[in-house]
Image (cartoon, rainbow, N blue to C red; front, side, top):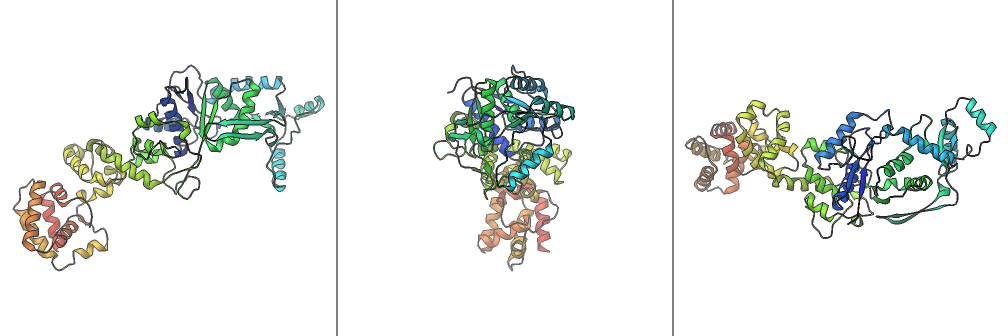
Length: 485
């Protein structure tokens, strides 16, 4: 176990939280819990045009829903705040002034147009863009001219030349960069806002972050950050760059692979423990073959050395399989509560119906939940119990009712049902169906399939002895007569 572990997740509140960001948050949370450490939430909100407080609320809501409660953050007491970058502007400015005084940074008066021209020239040559450094050694006269022109300068970090930057990554091993490939980079914009690579270093230092666990797309940022740590005299945390999350076609995860944002899975009726289990196995694997792992077990087994270098593949079919497992393990009451918004939206019931028929609804859930991959599918699976008229699901179902022996089967069952008790029970239905099959001697399929289609419009589904008591005697008789027409 590692002592005094402090890790963080630092989303930008510019939209709902993405699946990839949640996976990163989960790795941090699991690592903190495994090591009895601290998990910190902070917001990188310096993109003022796009950052909104409602997105902060959404991000916190989704993390809580998944059970990833933070130990320190914007809404909790902590000794290392503020936990929003916009509340730390003076701190960033103070460190920038220190770097300027120590000649480790300089004021850059280049306009966006000048920078864009340099970028364009590099592209034409087929070279990666690096700032030319033309403001690095301005003399006093040149500085006066720039100041007199009214140009607001940015602050650029002076990258030392010929320096090898070596990162001992906890996932990828030794990764090396040359400072000559970087070019001097902006740390404070002309409007006073800090650039990501600068602010994140100060934030992580101020919050005493020991391990930076993030996606591999940030590897290219790491050498700049290491140089800033060194220039500011800060202790450098350990880095662990987890693999990306890709779709099955190995492209960047997007809507075509399933919902990209966590909130959509919550609304569709995925269970948080299933999503946590699934996301934990995206780029991390425990010893052994086991895939169903409750969160306590994930915490116990999670170590950084089991994070894969290869991308985690987001397979919606695997998530559905896993979520279906957790649905089957859940109580009928829990699934009913999750199903209610979907049943209401489908127009199947209102609050009064729910209040008067809760026990019946629980029985419906008990019958259909084994077939659910996510709770939102309840609309289709429970439809047969709410619809007034049976709708045939396809031509195959329609053709079943055209067979020659169907009228005999349906009339026989109708007569048997007529003599049954009003609150017909499952064991009673089993007996009636056995009698019909025995009397007609047509074979099970020619008896039970037309009955199923007549009552449900489907060729597959719950057992008839489960369906008939839930439909009730009167509705069963009506549907049999309708099919006979």
